[in-house]
Image 1: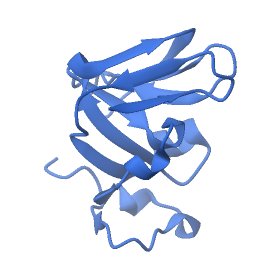
Image 2: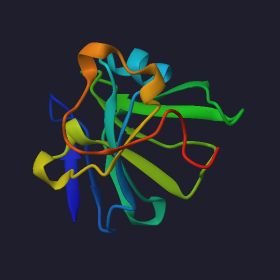
Image 3: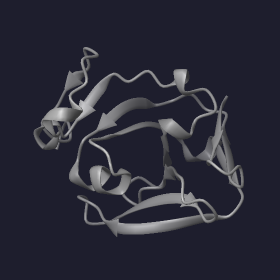
Image 4: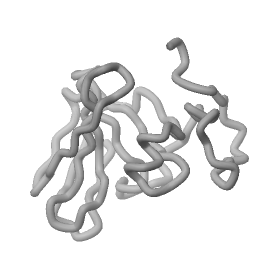
Length: 134
């Protein structure tokens, strides 16, 4: 079970399914959305995910041509999870919003070709210049 929520406590979520992947994404979209050098995310099956509270969604064009949807608290603005239209069976949880952030154990870093020099992680992650398999 994974659980988490926003800074003010108005939004809570949980997922009963296991994480399908755990990555750090350094694409420019994630950098701009988070205000950082990359976003640590884990993917879970949408069928195992539920959220409650004042969730708002922001949509931007994704690399797939479909919208990248980032969900945040309507009260405090905390970035919480994504619901990408390119994979409607997936939810991506932003690791910083987990109740227990130690549950996030990344294996890969994506879009490292766009990573700022100051955002390099020395964690022994498999690094990919873009999206693997694309």
